[in-house]
Length: 224
Image (cartoon, rainbow, N blue to C red; front, top):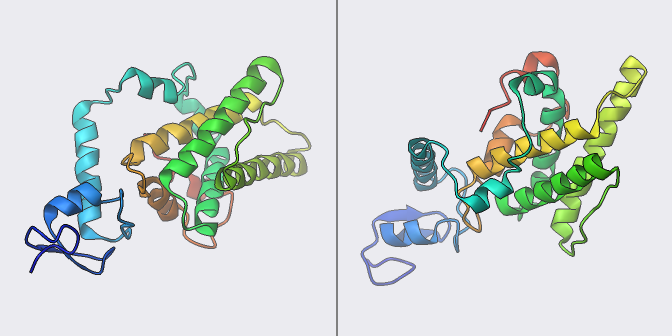
């Protein structure tokens, strides 16, 4: 039998995305590009593992364009991650909530929305003016709204429990940049990649509390 995609090469593996057998070459070329690969596909999981091993072998080397996307001027110390665990977890939950509400979202959507928000907070920190870049992308607007809602609720929770709001905009910026770097480290970069989204889903099963308690937080933050 021939591959269900190219109809030329011999089929060798079952592809749940096309509900048929395809050849390894089409699997490698079309995975998360034209194919909506389910998260539990063994070939997808294998490819992600190989990508992580390759990234480790590269020892974090990135080109100039990638470095710009990572906000290299923003330094994030381990002390910050420890002190603001709940903020990072809350924002991570907001991203996972957005992805669950709209199953068509991809890593690119989440990363683009977080990057845009980080730029807005960077402008706010540097000039005290919150600039929200105009976008016609409804999905990105929805993600940004969910994140902003989480920030507001976090501040309201601080006010309620300690009588004041301690969360600074600079800390929100750092948390967003941390999540951006994590997303870029997790995604395959392919148009339909959902590796980052699947990672978030694994950290926050459905019906999980938005802001985890200290006893839960420590094991969830993974430094990219």
